[in-house]
Image (cartoon, rainbow, N blue to C red):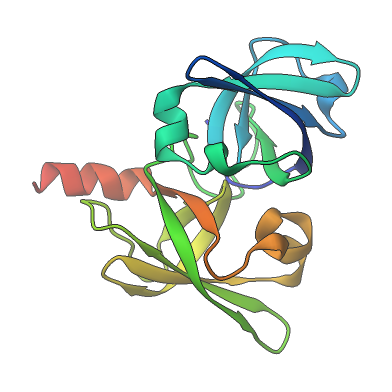
Length: 192
């Protein structure tokens, strides 16, 4: 379980294909605090630490994960949003995030406002929806939806979030991971 509050950005230092799997090696300032078998969210995707060597750790993404997320587009040098799972008893600063990406979306517009940025995303039609002022997780970042439309929404990013996540690397056309609000998913399922 995660909150969508990004701790650090990690840097991809190696990618290794093994059959349909992709081993992703990351360098982060928190590597020394990790342990093998620990769950860590990478752009919102919960992956298990399988190896640690110095300041680099490795996780493995299987075909299912690669097919449904943007991890298959990673290259050495890319920055990835990193969050460790929450501790029981801590504040829930974002919203409940499982680390299970529902689908990807494309960035269709980036606006630079007077003190903040807006990002608009379009996603393929699905049973998932966004609601105005509801929660959405984009590349692992807990955000509030603005301008919710069918298969499209926008988010407003404060300068701190822009500087401390990989939102600063987004361009029109960037593919991102989406995890829709768990409460909304249950309500949608009950009404279908």
